[in-house]
Length: 163
Image (cartoon, rainbow, N blue to C red; front, side, top):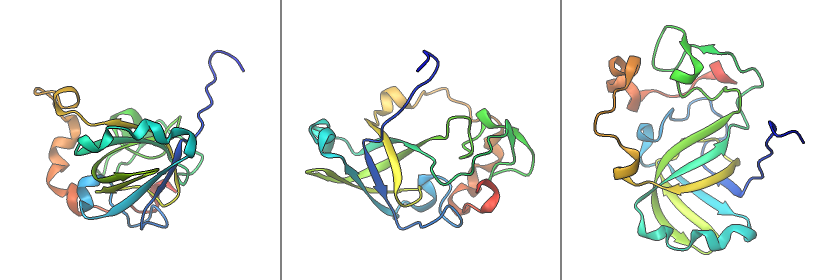
């Protein structure tokens, strides 16, 4: 393997009520009640120690259901125009890595129960990180072109454009 290639091994799987991307929330805030289960492989269970002290965590995962094409310009769910993929949260990306901030309901053995999940069932999990507002929420953040769409995010659902 060359130094420019990386191979990631899933540490577990995310289970959700969403059988396909079509119709699921496009961000966790879109359905805060959507429950999910993170199941870790046995080799990684010790890494869950102390996670139960946090209210939220960041999930990094592989968009396994988002088609193979990775256009550099997309029409995001919250806009009618084409935007650069790196200025969106579109699931079709050069490396197909997704990120969600979810609420931790409980941590027990090899399982983390979460709320506010927005991923397809059986999504391969790459990593879990604790969400720390002081680290993860800059006080002077600007949301670029998304500012005009912020009021509609909770009612938007995914459609077939990224399958």
